[in-house]
Image (tube, rainbow, N blue to C red; front, side):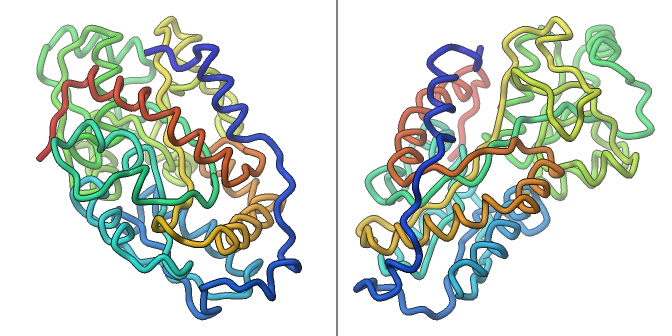
Length: 330
């Protein structure tokens, strides 16, 4: 699917537009439900993976802006649904947030035949954190030094090569399925319980490739080799690595996005305070540099409404990814 469609460009532009965040000073004495004690940020994925890394970076700087401690609670399993369910049932008092992703608020609504929550009705917007395109990676010791090398080998021995993912229906799974469709090659999908385990197996050479985000430390160490970027533009962290478009594999654009949501019913004034703290954190040059260093795109702060419009409008795009993959989960 071509994610560089004009409507997609308008959507992303709206999501990352600069807004005048509500000043923290004006909300200090608001009648907010938040206690001022520790705030829990639920992450529906294991520690050590891309989602967890994004959550911890954002939480560290957001906590400083809020003057509150933010505790990361990894509730992994079921493609992120365990954590998502927990936050949907949490008290709407501003003390519990969810790291929202393309899985929790897009892919899973199509991938799973039944959910215990409604990704739109059961949540309220807080703000956008970052966007991160997938990168095609092979082990540092791999004989494949280009996408053409990989595709030729796969077509020469159908069904022999494999790719890893964080699980059935994960972004890595769907990115791999899109890659298979674009190249018309036969490779085996191996789902793992989280990105961290998939990356371990990849670096050990037991997995041939993966399309994922957040792997820059392994790339810099030489443990992994990047072959292509699944986006319409090159990544600032990998300026020498071409996009699939540049390499002749048109339309292979797969990205993860990360944001914060609260349980439905969380007061607007509380969410404004959280949005302001998040945007204050994101505007720090060192924070932007760290996100870029992780392989993400630098984005400008988004308002509560802009982020929610982005979430709602991207869901059909996520559904198309699932359709292409043919994936289903229970």
